[in-house]
Image (cartoon, rainbow, N blue to C red; front, side, top):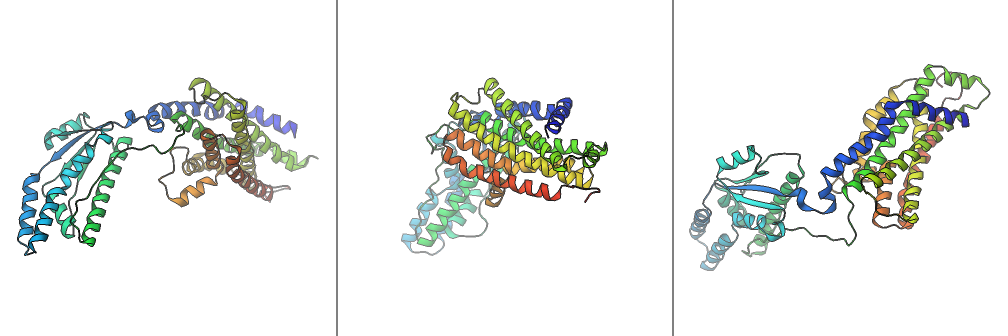
Length: 419
């Protein structure tokens, strides 16, 4: 088996393109993503600051007066008429929205400037503002009718953004969604309870943890590491397919060497390569990007335990891919895995972005992928170095590895033919 192991490692060292993917590509992605998103993960709002143009195409006072006239003509008792008129005055949605956007809790994040529509559109085209919020004609009246009387429809905001995919757009969209949801909810409660109280909307950013947050470089160092180790499996399977075409595997089966030694050598080679890969990624990232400030043996021992467990799991995954490749006698398995399956596993495992807002089922599936479970273990250790917290994610990795290995042994062709 030692000869098989040395052979597989030598084959990989001679493949420059694979080495480039496994080692150089992660560093490139870590640098790009780490620098571009460093403010978001560290809690620094500089990366999310935005300039907003507010366009009001209606006269708010005139719209409120129009609603108050409607209330006076409804034939209600004087006390109820007076309460509804006061509610219309104090619950103006335009006033509440401006109050929210100009709130001191959001002052570090949002700068609001009132403009005419033409000026706002020109500023958006020139990218001097990041977004334009428009309150169209009839917004206040439609909103107040919905809030006070429960009429269908309601006012509609218009939002134009310079970059639909930017983090600022996501934040602003979330703020506006929360504003609409809060106003509608408070208005519904007021109508059901018989009160004519104005909805109150507040906003802000609050930190609820005393620990240092995960930085962007820490997140993407771990995220890219657990993703690119999966490519080792497809690389090993590709080598097995090439050896099958060159009759190497057939010669092994005709010799007196047990065929399972071949599979075992592939799994151990994959695990060894992953261990070296993770050591280089974490070590060089700490050296070049100052990703990990911890320099104690206790910290790095936890990282080593997680890495070795992940390496063994990837070795079992590589064995499964080798078994399927040899059984099918096709290079489709490593091609499909490297071309699509790895990206899917990286997404549901959280390598690209946190999955906090994703459906519960998707997060549950991601936690049972080797990369997703390893990601969870690494982050738990970074936040609080406690071996007790590693038991659950490491157990998931071990269970998945056992499943991969069992399937590999069941599918591996031991005798002639593809059976």
